[in-house]
Length: 250
Image: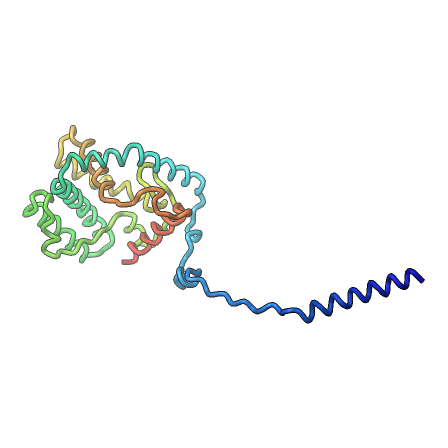
């Protein structure tokens, strides 16, 4: 009898509790404003992710990337700052024009290898004008005369004839590249070394090469780990690979 009374009391309490819940205020549906930054808005349709780049040597490449960062911080950038302090702007511009004139010679050779007569005549015209009127290339007269400036290297020449980029590669002291472009540096270096030997004495070969490197770094605004991205390595890898595809296709 006592058990039945307890059970009836329990069921009655449960029924009253359920009734109170059902008669209380119902939760209102919540509306959420669409966020401003969504994947669909900030990533264009057809975007190729950085992971699409073939990078079988990623572990080694990341270590070299980090090494290049430390070399840049402790050696390259201090030298560049000293160079900018010692050399006034007009002198640095002259040095940059001079080495660009050398690079136009590289474009001449690779334009021949690509069977690209228009680029060959454009680069040849630039070299002739800048080497004479421009005082050995110190003044970029050709650009002031609206001469086009194609830029070709042996990596692009290989790509022109169907050679793929191959594995992504980070080169010590230099930065992002790939197997094809890394190999392409050798013929380009050989061509430019032949020209340097004709222009400069043996004692000036190394100083001129070092000055070329400092000038190149002084004109590249990129700074390691200042992009604001947690995925800087992947971003640089994708940007370089995409740029080289465009360079070959143009």
